[in-house]
Image (cartoon, rainbow, N blue to C red; front, side, top):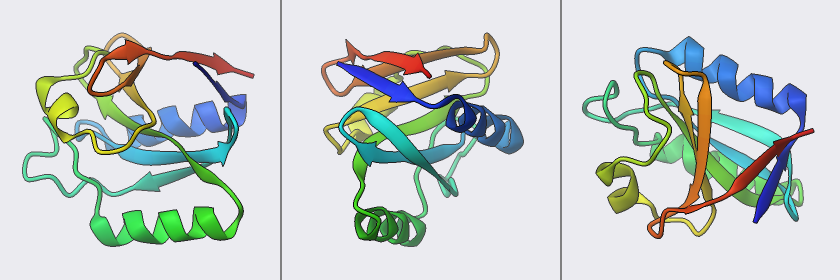
Length: 128
């Protein structure tokens, strides 16, 4: 599987991650097929946002409704690991609820990992 992200949206992901640091950021990727056409940054309301993420439920539902009204589907979920690594934690795997790629932005090493969870199958991300 390949997920294609335009460079302008790629930069938006990283901007969100650095803006929220040292907290983990979280957001949605929407589009059609394998092409991301929109990014929906969300608010992390986790009990310990420096170590895990939990998207604000109201904003999550609102983003899903907007994406659907614009004819797009959920293509991925992104979040950051401010201190690395770019692989899913046990919590990430346990809490994965959607059958889409999960992108993990490692701020320490400027790396991104993308995985289908819970299998941890890697997904190729191409910045276009």
